[in-house]
Image (cartoon, rainbow, N blue to C red; front, top):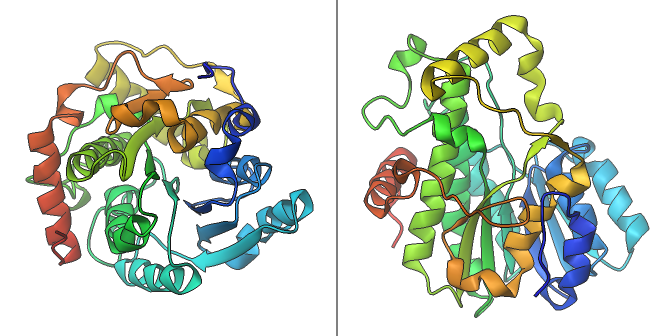
Length: 319
């Protein structure tokens, strides 16, 4: 099997696994222009999938990506799905729209996220980063599991996370940071990204890896709109102070990747048949990470505790 690394590109990964893309039905959340999700979609389009479903906040925002896909291959069916991950009502509507649009999903890529934003709550009363980056994808994925299972075997669920997870943990007693009083933007982001890894661990324990394999992915350090709040000097200083406090010193800043390099590891997780036996693992720089996240992010007991909390927050139990 091909070996990928830090500098590998999304197009290289797609070219390496043509049968994993050809004629597949793939759902990507958050494919905004100039972001990793959009670049993932464009690379996949070069592999001739059957149907790409792009879920975002507005058709107007995603239309440039759809137009670019049509230029790459007009034969690919592309469907826009309106989705606000910070609204459980919107997630439920989107899940129904997706199930109308397709009777199966081969690959689900939970790419959408927000980062280090000012304190806010979702309309469901959940801190916005935890609500958008974890609870929204948790609900969407579970609502779509029958459609994913309809693939029969070989389905994938890919959850994007971050090395920022190393700075966080799930505060089960207070996910809302004392209603904002103890909130630090990067701490909220770190908590949500720990949740993405734990969610992946839970999924891997619930399904045979030959039926549905699940992976969490750190795409790398890529300059996108995700970092918009770091332009605020106060937010940036707070982040540095928090990192120093949690890590005991400054973390080494990762070298910037291009968008093509940034989507490569997502595509390895989605396409590479050689990693199936590693379902539940964390990937970075083109493969299964040699150093997996800390135990607080990978312990199956903690993962199931988070699953139970997530079910409580969405008001629905999933078998």
